[in-house]
Structure formats: structure tokens, C-alpha cells
Image (cartoon, rainbow, N blue to C red; front, side, top):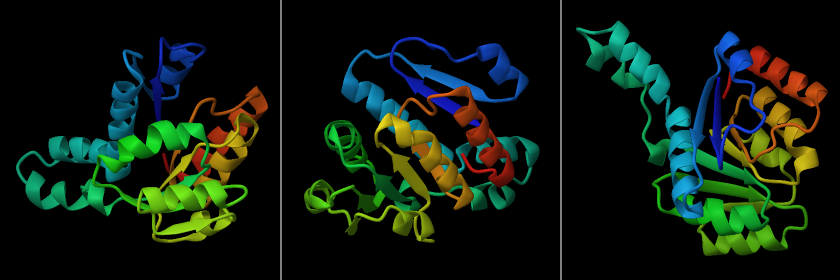
Length: 193
């Protein structure tokens, strides 16, 4: 479990509660939009790659780490990214940063299709759709970026988790405490980040 917060301060993140639930919290200060986005993107890709598990395994398999720990580590180029939402945050922040990585930008979903298709052409994304479920059901997609309107965030994160996807959620994760409890329950049932 990881919370990657970028911007200024921890806002309303209950650090004591996170510690009690063994949730890692990272804060990246907002010195510059591109730098902050690049740091957050790197952290997201590292979680999807399994570097946390690699680090733990390399300590556990001290004398045989190459045989036991390295096999689970994935390269960024092996991470297939699906994006739900094609608004300004996606267009101006996430896609320019992701394009600088070796991540495989695989699919994008937008409500009307026009913006998603334009971004797919510009950023060489293989597949554009108006049906976000096709991204969730696609076994090729490892990581889903949810960059939609705030009222959709919690429900989409829950759907991603139920479809065994690692998920990045542009803040806020939830609007109400009840939504947050549902997200946590979905995480506990499925175990993805």
C-alpha cells in the first residue's frame, strides 16, 4: 500500500492512521509542475515494476539475490499503461512526462472519443476508446492512470482493483469517507496498488 502525494504538504493525510495500517506515504513538494510530475511518475512506475518487492527480496535472499529477487523485477518498457481520462491534466502533465519514459502507452479512454483519439495520435498510443471497461478487461494493461473528474475517482479505482490492475489516481482518491472505505476494502480483497 502506497500513497504518493505530490504538491505542497500532506494536506489531510492522517499519517498516524497510515502508519497503523502499514501504508507508506511519500510527499513530493511542488517546486515545479514538470519536476513534481516526473518524480510522481517515476514512483508510480517503480511500484508497478515491483521494485518494493525487489528491495525486500534482495534483503531476504542476501546470498542468492540474483536468482531469487531479480526475476520479479520488470523494466519500464514492460509496463503497459492504460489511461482513463483525456482532460487537461492528462494532456498537459501526465502524457508529456510518460512520453519521456520507456513505459508502453497502450490505450486511452475519453468520454466523447475526440480528445482521446487526438492524444492517441500525438503520443503514439495504440488504442483509443470511449469504453473504459475495455481497458479494465484488457489483460495486456498492467497500470491504469485514472485522470477523470473527481466524482468518478473512487468508483474507477475500485473497478481497477477488482480487475487486478495497478492504479494511479489523480487526487482526490475519494470525496467521502464512505468512498474511501470502499476503496480500502477493494484493495484488501485484491491486493493491487
